[in-house]
Amino acid sequence: MKVGIGSDHAGYRLKKLLLPMLEKEGFELTDVGTYSEDSVDYPDFAVQVAKGVASGEYDRGVLICGTGLGMAISANKVSGIRAVTVHDTFSAEMARRHNNATVMTMGERVIGPGLAAEIVKVFLTTEFEGGRHQRRVDKMTEIERQNLDATC
Ligand code: RB5
Image: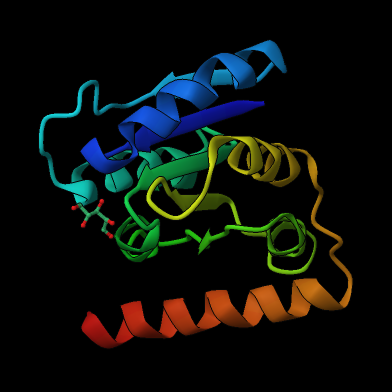
């Protein structure tokens, strides 16, 4: 599975801890940055990962900032993306099984590294259930399509 991963300065340390663990699990990682704790702007990294997921370059995206919130808001601006902020394993599992979320975000200032690692693993290994959930996901996509039509 190809995973695009990114952070801002506030998520850099957590991302650095997660990278070797995810590599060991066999995920093919692309780290789009940032590569230090120098202050940067989270939308610059969210858009790279989200566009990579939307184009099929990555199967999933993982984004980390201070809270996970700015990353999720930014990623969800990219057409076709369903990004969720998750800080517990149940939500990570349901975001995949029911919502077919393809990008997850977390906050380094919210969560410890042990739980964060578990959450990412759950998110990356849980399949979408389809069925009645597909209909609901399709309705979300339709809202997006109508918004795009309204701007043309
Ligand atoms: C950076 O200070 C912080 O605002 C950012 O990492 C993130 O938490 C925004 O949502």
